[in-house]
Length: 310
Image (cartoon, rainbow, N blue to C red):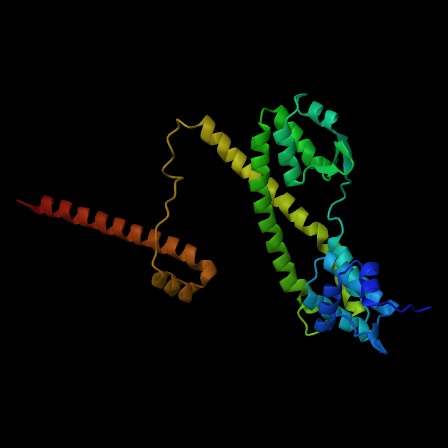
């Protein structure tokens, strides 16, 4: 049975304010009420619509995008596929499960001495999350991340340095994540997201399936590249420290030489961008050999002239 509501009752039931309800009406997000005599009457459908709007706002959608979603719903295209895609993206991107830890256990794992500043840093960074109603417990979203901090602290790294390192690392990792998203959006998801209309339920379901398939690729790529970079830089770092007094081998050294843009463009026009560096190297070596030959010939001529002098 459909109920009739005054705007004040609708506001109370939905959690929205009267002013917000009227603003939604003005934006076209909420249908106009039915006029009964001198009163405006709202139905249960208005209540359902307000709850849909609140749910979408909680998911981070703008009012403009919500209006488009709701228009799709009203046109019979449904919200199931789009909301399913949103749920797939908003779901966990790791197999880790959060664990609960007491303050006493936390202090024990970091040497047994309470450190309120370090705990506050961890909460700010999201490494620890307060448990409502229990000031002596925390939720650990990533036990692996906390375990790394414990190992670093046991190795002698101060907690403040660990927090600073995580802040710096997070900026760099977010940059990598942004680039991966831009890359996959351009080459994979653009056909679902860049059209004039919202994706159909079938298209949204296909995109959600692709998200599930591609989700681990970013981590696998970063793992492989991090392993490569760590080995390369760690070996270089060790050699620098252990062989600091060794003289560099000039035969193995290289030097960067600036080349004008015009010259580089001319070379690339001749051999292509991929062959430009090799062409310049070979051309330089050929010039050096030619000058060496000229020098040998000149020295030979000078010696012959001296031999013929009476």
